[in-house]
Each structure stands twice: as C-alpha cells, then as structure tokens.
Amino acid sequence: MKPAPFEYHAPETVDEVLELLDQHGFDAKILAGGQTLGPLLNMRMAAPEVLIDINRVKALDYQRHEDDGGLTLGALTRQSTLEDDAQMPQRQPLIAAAEPEVAHRAIRNRGTVGGSLAHADPAAEWPGLAVALDAELVLQRHGGASRTIAALDFFEGALATVIEPEEMLTEIRIPPWRNTSGWGFHEFNRRHGDFALAGAMVRLDLAADGGCRGVAIALIGVEDTPIRAGAAEQFLRSQRVDDAALQEAARRAADNVTPMHDIHASADYRRSLTRTLAYRALADAAARATRIPS
Image (cartoon, rainbow, N blue to C red):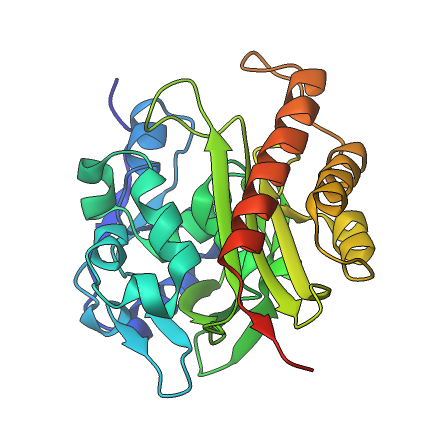
C-alpha cells in the first residue's frame, strides 16, 4: 500500500518546525525516525495533510551527560546512539539494559527517543523508562512558549499524550542515577524484537540494615499506558528487603493492575507475567544495590 497524498516539509530549525505546527495544527504530523509512522502511513492508518520531516533539525540531535550525573537528550537522539554510549552502563544502567531490547538494531539506528515517547505505545521500552526514572519532558510551541511535563503525567492512553497539536517534544531530562542504586529489567515477548506482552523496570535503594530507602517499579505492556506499581512501592518502603518482601511486592504489583486483553495475550496471562517479571526485576535490583549507611 501507499500513503495518502500529503504536503511535505523538511525544515532545518526548531523555529521552522514550530511555525509549521502553528500553521497546520491537527493536519500536521512530525516524521522523526519513521519506524512507526512509516508503516502507519503506508497502511493509511494515518493520513496527515502535512508531513514535517525533522531529520535535518540538528539542534534536536544531542545527548549530554550532565556534571550532576543527569542525562539530557534531544528528541531526535537515535536509540542506537544510547546503546553505543560506553558511559551508559555506569551513568544510567537501566537505560543501558533496556535499549538493546528495543526492536532490532536496524530499527534502533533510525528510531528516536522522542519519537518513541510521542508515539506512546504502552508496550514500548522508552515510555516505561521515562516513568521508572522520573524523567521530565519539554514541550515547545511557536513564539517561545514551553512547558515541562513529568513522565507520569505525559501519557494519557494508548498512543495518546498531552502534546497539543501546536507543540513538539524537544527534550528529555533524566535525573542523576545514584551509583548505590540497584536496577532490574525483565520483559517477555514471543520473539526477540517484538513488543513486550509485559515488562517490569525497577530501581531500588537499600539502607544499611537492609530496609528499603526508595523504590520505583514501572510496568509496560499491561495497561494502556506505562504505569508505576504504587501499591507495591508503598509496601516495600516499609519493609526489610528479603525474598519474602520481594515476592509480596510482586504480588501486589500484579493484583493492582487492570491488564489489557487482546489477540496477543489474555488479561489473566498478562497479570501472571506481571507478577513473575516484577519479582525478577526486584530480585535483580536488590542484588545489585549497595546498602547506604543511615
């Protein structure tokens, strides 16, 4: 199949992109890596009147390891760029673990971080990473106005975000990773490169006595947005972190989701996967965490 006719623009600056969005609004669609939009156009599941190709906007293609340990990404940063970053396993180990599981290398060579977040597939890794890492997302519009959105407030539903038609996601800000934090990442898919039927991402901090100082448990592929397992996190924060506590936290994570049911997996199957994957991710995080003296 072939796309429906559209007007094509290839701006070279952020201002040009924002001006085009201001002019065309709902009728426009941004093309970044095109790994999702391309097939949607060909199948005519998307038929914008205006296509704005941002691949020439070099100002959006950057990554910075900040002095405080944080990570700042332009929306056009390619996924493979992060995968190949030798600093990533030490600076942001959860990203380093998840990035190679994003589809296939050919797709990661073109796919962008901003594109994955803006597309908002609930089974994709980057929406889950943004939620797990408490990322902040910067949206801009013509005239210089911008707003910064917490990742937990960014996703509204499957393939739906708070981005307005005149706005563009321009930057992703990820807080510093504490080198004492443990991490765990597990997902399940039928074949390598497929979207996950379910997945869990964990970061965990331990006190000197083995208690939980802080925890984040993000789940993907289960509901129509990436979510944090709030009930499990709240339980674990009051516990000494041993296997029994991790098992109970995983159970609470699974019991407090409303799983999707589709042709790929039943709701019950996704709930069972959630419990198993959350436990594995928690156990890995606990094993990797360094106890911090009070």
